[in-house]
Image (cartoon, rainbow, N blue to C red; front, side, top):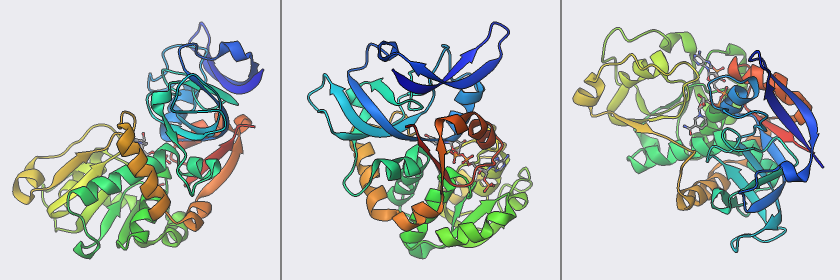
Length: 329
Ligand code: NDP
């Protein structure tokens, strides 16, 4: 038997989640590696899966948790043996497949990444999908020519999971970071992570009035999307890039193409779910080298499986600061 957070939907369509004891034989049969999960976390998508929003979960009962880290307990695949430490993000685990909010998970070996040296399973989940994606976003900006001497880099949704880690990584790489937040009380926290400037959300949340404004940002990691992304595009410096990561502020993009045509601005799509293995390894290695673990500590709050229903609702309201580490045991 093992414990898991199980989400179920009643005939009336009401979605509820509670911690239950499950039989080992209830795990997905077509996985080939069983992992004793140690830690999981709470990402925006987890909020959708826990509360039954967004249409991500099609089959109930369901165990959410889009990422986890733990130790291999059983393996039918040559790449992993009993005792190996592993981390998993993406591949629709926790959405279409049972996920990490459980003491055990059975998954496909193709989806796992060996835990990089220098990171514990707990630290890997303090990073989680949000941090892994923040790293991919920074790597994409670098691949498109961003250098620290080019000016301020904007991070939107800065006090959230993606934003906190993007801020820390960029600052530790020597960039001057401007963090956009709708929570003025997080200013000290963001400065501790390395932001040198705080931008109030209201300054950027208005729909585009002029397609081009002053050239202000050398790069941007955007976790918000919507009207804010549209506005930011018109404020990018000539030839600069925006990594589009999230939609916490909306999926619509009420923008014009003028910043692309007149300033050569690049909008870079960042997907963490289907990243090939080699790129996953590269991103995890960069997390180890570029994210100061002291800063990671500052952004973490701790939780158990029982806390997840409340945390799932809170993250959808933008009310979670930084990262949550869930000890599933
Ligand atoms: P969080 O909730 O932790 O962070 C989102 C932040 O966005 C909030 O903390 C808040 O920051 C800001 N925000 C929330 N609502 C609004 C709003 N209406 N207008 C403007 N800003 C808002 O979520 P995560 O960091 O886990 O995820 C952020 C986004 O990235 C999500 O949309 C998520 O789905 C996406 N994502 C995408 C991935 C990919 O593969 N592309 C992978 C991981 C996440 P503040 O309080 O500072 O204003």
